[in-house]
Image 1 (cartoon, one colour):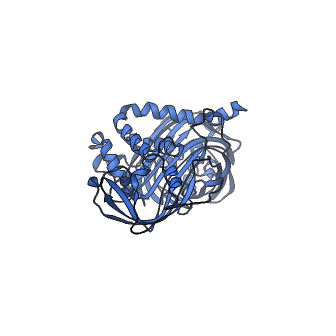
Image 2: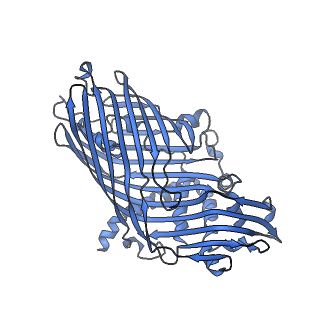
Image 3: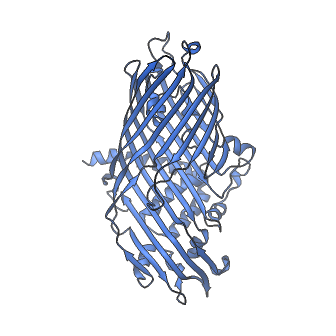
Length: 500
């Protein structure tokens, strides 16, 4: 049984190796980030996993959301099933193998990135961004694509086995002065300061793997009209979930001697840690966080007589997909989760520096101001469900213009442990052939606004970014990168079994 748990969580060790190798180049910056997070809570799994996710955010020089550009390519092989399982139907490949892929994306509201200033970013810059006066929102997605394979059974039907592991980290509208009040002296802050938050401030991390059985099938092929549908059923293996939520916090921060104090405070705070416990020596073999998920999709193609002999015979393609349905049930780690209502009356003062250590113990040791509320022994974390609506138009031979709209559908307003997705629109002009493709994605999201990127596919290699051009010519509030390797073998009706 222990061997099963080891295989189940092997991806955790892969992540650990990648992170510890990568951060050697940026050790000074990362040490400051880790120190800041440790000051919030020592020896707590919740912030250890939050720290791991933050390292991805702060140490990556370029990162990408959903492989913009490559996702529109008709020759993306088995990878197309991750974006819409109906893409598998009528696949141009008899056999396609995704050998390896990585997709990293980070976006935020406040901090700008550009090629000219990346090398000058310091740890202080990062901490000022996290703890500045303006509330910040941050989103980090990291996906590791392990071997996946698709097989075309016949002209209409293709099936696939998919494997992917993901880290989803988000910070939403966290007030920097609230965080600074814990670790800063009054002389470093502009006091008194009144916090009147009508929003729910939240931080969450979810780490999990998914194993999918996918299929696409042509359901209609008559005249100019061609329709295919697809579905993916996924087994979900949760590694860890951690969250902190601060609901409608209202407080006044002032000075008392050399400390920052809070008064006239109300609201509620909840925090949770679930999944494997890294404080447990047997954590590699523990954990039973599992769940099931699904992706559903459909594709319509308008095909003309003039294009019927081409390998890509449509003039226009429309698609719709509902991705990341389902969730994972996590068991709470005892002693690392709790909920509290906050009530510090006017005329009474609480020393904020007491949180510089173990916040949960501080809550528990001060019941006069923090009333403990009941929490469940387990909770279900939803996947970042999105609705994807796409279109693709053939402008010239080999030249296409694709559009994709993403609508976030997961509730994390009241369920802080749920990961967050953004609403986004991407327009992608591209050139594609069997052996080569080039993409120019123009991407807009409600988090990082407008960005222009670049990507390509050359033989088995694909790579790209949604913000590369923006960072080269100006600045961007996101950094992203994707790359990977796949090999495909064409169907028998082709003269050669070319690799694409």
